[in-house]
Image (cartoon, rainbow over all chains, first blue to last red):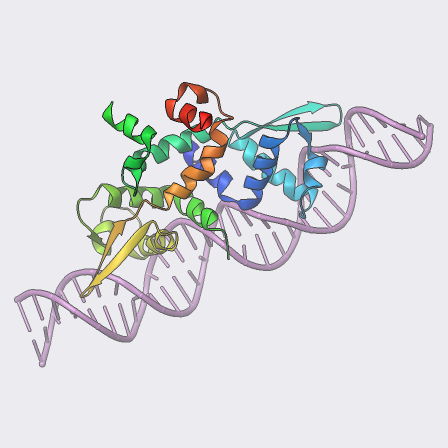
Length: 107
Length: 107
DNA sequence: TTAATATGCAACTATATGGTTGCAAATATA
DNA sequence: TATATTTGCAACCATATAGTTGCATATTAA
């Protein structure tokens, strides 16, 4: 199908999915689908589709418990985006003002 | 239309556009469209569309000189992606092994 | 056991996206 | 001046995407 990095970037390129992901990251507990969809204006099915996309990118996991499916965030795939970015960091303005970048580049 | 960050993420979510962008970043000189498209299997018009998307995201600039249009990369918009990522860095595994993250979090 | 709740699946719609081809216009070269 | 090169614009096509609704099913609660 497509690259892992492409799958991840496409998943977060949608603003609604970023919102859903964010809500799950800051949530103190896993949330069932209905509860997530209650926070948005689009239908539950619309939310379910977004959740599937996020799950496909590895950005969320879902645990089924009885009739409910509890979703929680897994930010780890974003490390790949970070790595992709890292190469270009040396080319953008102000890069050398950033200590971490400096350390990366002298090693 | 849409968020700046959404525009940027959508631009880099396409693998062909990432390739084009990368080619321009590592190029030592600005490249005319025909020369860029010669490096890819898709048509010149296909490349032109991608260039427009990249330009719309601010990731490249284009200078017209005579009949030619010279393209060069501008990685600065990626700083916004980096900032978006930064928030989630604290939630991913191994974040504290990274000195830069550590420094960010004690300040 | 009956009713309510949470969900998945399928079908459908509208629009966006990635790609193509054909043609006209501007610029450069012979 | 005639020809070749570089490009933009417009139309078109196929598929992907973001969303909807309707219905069936499983689990929980009354």
